[in-house]
Structures are given as structure tokens and as C-alpha cells.
Length: 389
Image (cartoon, rainbow, N blue to C red; front, side, top):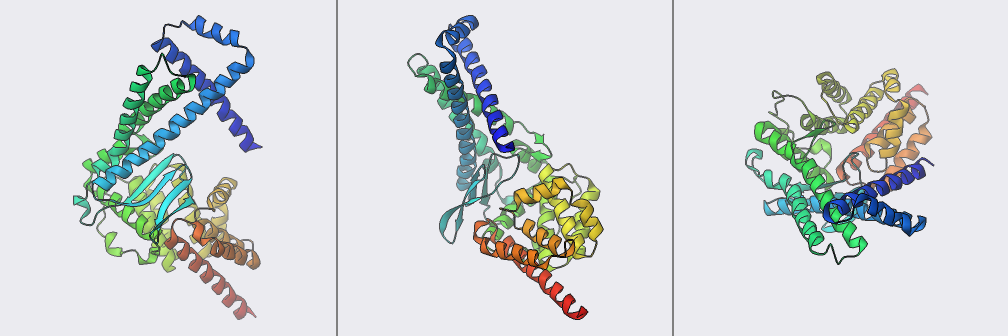
């Protein structure tokens, strides 16, 4: 029911936004007055007006999706031009990735983002790896499409049909909005946009090392490398002296994943608490990821009360929502079943489900690590039962 309500709300808001933009377009680019515009709608009757509103919504939706695809496509082209290699390309939750020499589609999501293009940087020291074109090409692609659609709009404004009129108008507006949103250095909910990343990496060369390291580790993990096998030398010498933010936290979470894969839960928990003690401004998703891993490591160390306190209804809802594309969530649910619910059969079912669906996940190395961690949990539980017997 909630999903239906949200869908209807989106249609209503989108239709109203489309209606408003159409009215603005008519006023700016035609000789129609506001009263003439409203009178023409009134004379058409109720159903044609509703149809036009829905048509406006459809055109607005297509325009924004098109600009998202073009934006991420710009990153792809910019990366390829500067020596990067393809890793994955995501629009909303649909992700295209290359595995074993062939392209496949999987589902993945990062709340607050419409898409993402991940590429493997060229070899060499992070200080020498180009980063400006890769980050800026998305905005450049939006501007280019905006210029093209605005030109088509003005050329065919008198001869085009209503849908072409709406689509070109909305695509130009969506492109301008997307270009401004990503081309002006901003930090939204603790996350830098493209221009913000460029400025950060220009000001702080250390941030460039974090950025390149994360791209390389993402590519390795997607292709099957477990976190415990990450080259530890890559993490050495990374400084947080210039301030601690999302860029630093993501690197630390990768290092924490390595410690969890090794079974060093005490060190992993200390590293997680260190992030919390720095009190960085992070997107809500990363705050929840940190809470999930603190809860997991607490369970592994016998701190069940601490884990139970962290596992609020909100966090449990987040775990359920992300468990289909983040294998660390089934790992946490397995620990909850064993340590809090004392339900070994449920824990074994969670493990078996993850094993059966391992190919659906993007990060193959992470999935293998989580499966091994869950087996280790169950083996430890078995040993404890046998000793007690």
C-alpha cells in the first residue's frame, strides 16, 4: 500500500511540475498569455487536461532518465579517454558489469544517487593518475545534450507536436539542473558531487589517493578478490590530517572489511568506533552501514546487549531492504539468528540462501568472504555445543 501511495504521489507531483514547466515554457517562448493558456485548457475538457498532465509527467520522467544516462555515459567516455577501464555502469538499481569477459546485468543501489559509473584507474602512482576528465565528463555530457535539445526546441517550436515540445523543453531544463547540481562544488548530506570531488582532490592530494584506492579495490572485489587479500601496502601511509570525511570513511570501511574477513573482530570493532569518535558528517546510508558492522562485531565478541541496542526497527528495516544486493546483511542476520535468537536452523537457512544466490551479487569477493564468515560462525557454534555435551 505504501509503494502504491508513493507511486501515486510521484505521478501527481510530476504532473503538476510538468504542468508548471509547460506553462512557463509557453509564457517564455510563445505569445500565449497566462489567461489564454488556462482558457485553452478549460475549453478542452477534463479528460484531455488529465491526458496532457500525464503526458507532461511522462516527458519529464524520460527527460531526467535520459540526462542521468548521458551523465554516467559522460563519465564512461571521459574515463576511457584517460586510460580507465570499464567496471560497472548503474542507472537507478540496474547495473551493467563485466564478469569473466562477458557483460551481465545485476541489481544494486546507493540511496540518494540516480546512477554511477565505476572504472578501474590506469596503473601507476595515485598522484599521477588523471582524475579531472573522468569526474568532469558527466557534466560536460549534460551540457552538450542540453545545447542540442534547446537548439531543437527553438528550431521546431512552431512545427512540433506536443510531446516533442515537452520532451525537448524538459530535457534542456533537466540537463541544466543536472549540470548545475554536479558542476557547482557542493556537499549534499556529506557526499561531494563531481565538482566537489575535483576541488577536494586538487586541494588535498591525499584525497586523490583515497579515490584511486577505492576504485581499484572495488574492481578487484567485483572480480572475486576477497577483502582479506587486499594489498595491505595500499592502506599504509594514508593520512587523515587534513580532516576526516566520507572519502576517508569509505577507505576505512574497506580496511574493516578486510579485518572481518580475517576474523579479527576486535580490531574491526575498534576501527569502527574510531570512525564514530571522529564524528564525520556522512550520508545516512554510511551511518547505517557502520552501525550494522558495529552490531555484527559486537555479536562476534559476545557483546549482545550492545548489538541489540543498535538493531533498532529503523536499522532492521534498512537491513531487510539492502540484503538482496549487499551480502554483509545476510551475514549480520545469520549472527543475529545464532547469538540473539539462538535459532541455528534459521542461521543455516540464511547461509544456504546466500550460497544459492551468490551470483546475483555484484561484489563476488565480498560474497565469498561473507559465506566463509558465516560458515566459521556455525562451526564455532557446533564446537560450543559439542563441548557443552
